[in-house]
Length: 82
Image (cartoon, rainbow, N blue to C red; front, side, top):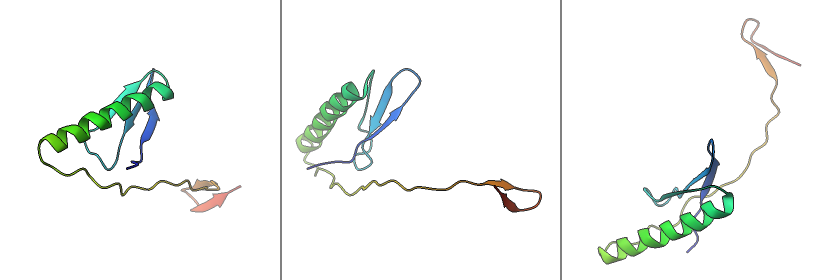
């Protein structure tokens, strides 16, 4: 199974979590290290669930990007400014 992983830049490292697997998190100094660590964390998490007789969560999360054209909005006049 493939799970969506969210990787975020923190101050001095990266952190990662899996929206479909609550409590499964990891960190690393680089993106590559973080991906390695979250993969290991996921393996241990799923193994623990199996050992407890619990099912693995089904991957459901999706990701995409959206674009926006930001214009400064003047709260006084309630109009967009170029």
